[in-house]
Length: 299
Image (cartoon, rainbow, N blue to C red; front, top):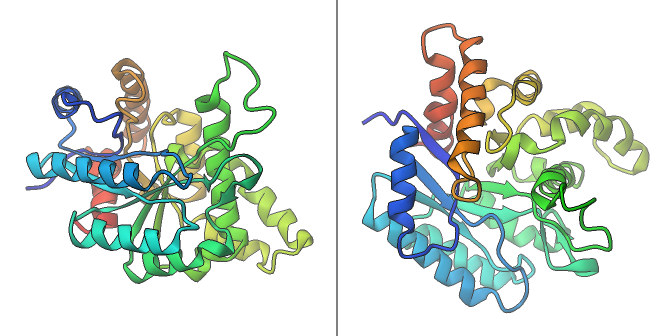
């Protein structure tokens, strides 16, 4: 069966007992055949191992109950826990049949937080590269003295998209993106502010010690994939298509983190934008809805 619409960015929420039914009702209304569940952010302290295990087991159970409607990206412990991460990766892929892993932009809290391309995390990336894993990268705020500008500009508006960009840029300038080419990294929210700031990184980072050339930096930025969750406005879609290409864009909803009305508002923009790009009826929209992610996941 050819899937017509796959929702990459479907937030696992709190996995209440009614969650599958709530999600299925939304999916049926939105014409979504399959959703890939993930927790974009879980506590990254030393006490999160049991929570991580429980969340992965719960998501796997939902997938077992509805195998044609759900898949999932596994969560990992703090990446500094190398042994714990490798154990979770093996269990998630080999036993729970995860389609990939979901990573936050950084691990830890406050001044102790480290971005996921820190050299201490290299063993985890080596294993993900060996497995040719898919990684869904979602920004998370590192607590600071100025967490966000004000109540009308909360963390999801100002912090999450910029943290996604910062983590992506860090993966590029540290050489991780180039060193682990078998890992397919999907950036949430069309990469946040990445399409607009990538050239700035390419132009200035070499003067700050980055060994990569501007062209190499740009090339590595273009090798990411991008989901449309909470980002499918005309300007954003035009920017990402121009920068990376339509074949690197995949559909995402962020349900149930955002209401269905907001998702529909963005979906309408996506539909309208795709119509302007059609070579054959439905071709461009199908690529984003299902074709691109199916190729990434090799479904």
